[in-house]
Image (cartoon, one colour):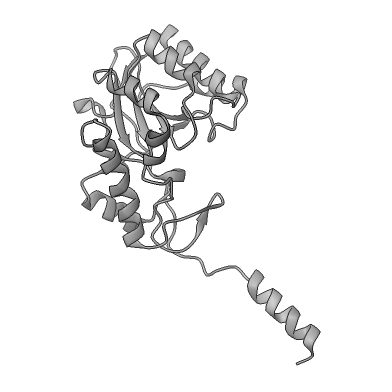
Length: 243
């Protein structure tokens, strides 16, 4: 083969898409509705890496609003002061598992939103177990909920994570689009939460505009008379829909 044609063939081979693996799923989760009482909403926050957004944390503290915080081992390591605050309020905050290194818990080689996935069942288990061990080492109770980076899984990785003793923390309302929304958009989205919603947002991006809107949206929900619940609140969690 002519050298230039050989080079072209090699380039095209590299550019060819990798064969698709199993379908990725993104479980939804809601909490039990109020049945005529105040609307019930669960606020859940991911602390992937980076710092802590005090705009959000301070509102939660000042207004005594319960929330579920999903932390990675990476975040815990670099935020001892914020971790101490969460630990000092065990009746308000529950600390749950977001993994060791913020690796998508997908058990075949791929990338999700540009993030390289775990790539094998063994690597998924390391990500889950490493996150849980870091939480216990920080002084918190053993976690019972897991939310992976990107919140996407395969059916087989969900089964494996469940086998490790975790429930998968889906959501029904994306409050900040990975902390990429503008402040107004995040405020409107969270402020519009309905009875039974599980809201996902991020509490680790203090320089992003979204955090300001998240804080304002939380206050708007409180002004509406919403009752905030944590995922661990006994009968609050509705069955997850079938995958």
